[in-house]
Amino acid sequence: MYRLTTTWHLPAAPEPVWGAVEQVAAWPHWWPGIDAAAMVRHAGSDGLGQRVHLVVRSPFGYRLRFGVEIVAAAPPRYARARVVGDLVGLGSWRVDPAADGCIATIRWEVTPARGLLHALGPLVGAPARWAHARVMHEGQRGLVTHLTRFGG
Image (cartoon, rainbow, N blue to C red; front, side, top):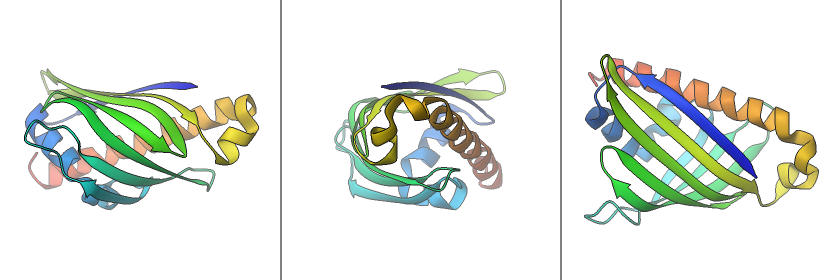
């Protein structure tokens, strides 16, 4: 199992950050590691039940395909999700206000269910963590640019 935590420092309040992240189909436009992002089902009025399908491109060239379903939410501060597909497990997103914008903390507790990461298991732990950190770093840079460009 991979336990991965990423912290993003963003130059906007939680509300515009949440608004940008809710627009899942736009992620490939500002997040270089996302090859495809599609809304499968919109959230209910309580923020629950949203389903998205993601294709993430690793710096090593392989692609991970997985679905994410929101199972707990308190917009614009928190969401927890179930992950299925090439990765299986849980993810969470927390946004806290900060003096210069906000801090987003993204956590994944996932296990590779199939493919190269599953087949090679512990042998690819360090490279997989590096690849994850790289994709997430590019996501932060892209979101900062997106927020700045669109007045977030």
